[in-house]
Length: 293
Image 1 (cartoon, rainbow, N blue to C red):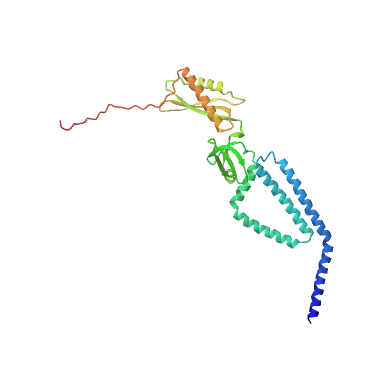
Image 2 (cartoon, rainbow, N blue to C red):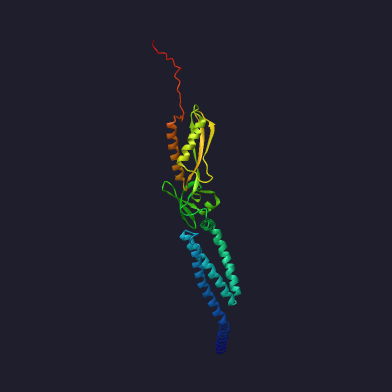
């Protein structure tokens, strides 16, 4: 009885192995085709990555973002080849299971890394955004400085005091920012006041002449001089003109140059720039009664 069972077992194993061998022989062309297709997609991913890197080298200056994007594209192309290879092997159920498992895992990872993924996608958007490039001087989220780095998590700003500020990419996408470097020219504002005894028309013409000599205007640019108010000790005005500005320091330099030139011109013409004066009245005297008189 035991010998009979052993022979049946050997026979069953032989039949099973024979069935596998038959299946292998029948599916050998599909297997070879699947391997060839997968290899083709691996090579294709390599060349697509190189082409994308060359095309985006000018648009994406940050190496870390460019390398990461190239790796993602390669992985997507290889995954497509993998799924096609599974289809050629008639492993549709395995393919369905893999896709379902990948969806569940992707959902779990997405929920766990929601903030990180938000910054990552924001970094990809910033890398293609022409309004923000490395070397630009920007103001955003209460900070101002030169953009020194844009990566998949944050941007790095070097402030005028030589300190670095790291701002998450999502904050840049969600909040407004001001970029001084996108335009070569900007309007400068200088505020001042002159005494009430001044000839206002003469002051206006003199100020316009001074600004025009030190800051030549281009094209349709013009200098504007406007009196604003009757102040406590002066009649105040603002003069607006155009100058070369690509960062905040350029504004300060232009204002400094204009103030010095205006002060020299006013001194030469005896134009008074008043300053507040505080008067102390000593008329009321306190009487002190001396004791013992």
